[in-house]
Image (cartoon, rainbow, N blue to C red):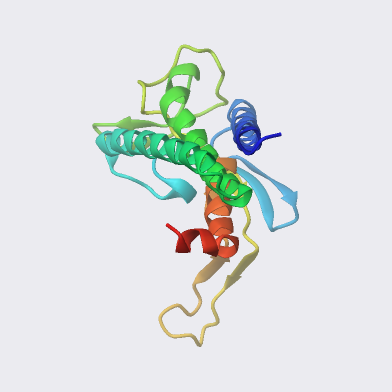
Length: 211
């Protein structure tokens, strides 16, 4: 199997796992519903994210469209870069690391561009309220849609509150306040991006020296 075939296989696997997990959650769980997978430190907790990775928000509909377009442009660039790396016969580790980032970016693009067109319900922006409005019930894959292109929300579900406690009362400023690590809720695509970037930084330092 060539380096290009290995990279393509990795991308396809990440995308398939990412989309299957999101569709299963969206069509079987209500928004904000959760259940424990492993004690108190691993939950499936269904949220819809109108912004960036790990629940970070972006402003309104215009911000949502801009973010989606930015993701598309960035993904096109990363895809071109992978092709360039393959032509230069770059090490397989680097190619797979960049491929993980590419797969994660495309995974979230699919949510943003397609989900509003294929599901019957989802989080939408209410212009009168001036914010994103959630919905009730379980979504169905009816291919009729609940919003326009670029306005679908990303499905997040992985939650690892490994440490869930309170700061000691004697600590200044934060004493008595709740502390959770790791609090963000994310998905497989976010994980692929994070793992890909971390892998490149930690194990492919020689590659960055040659850029």
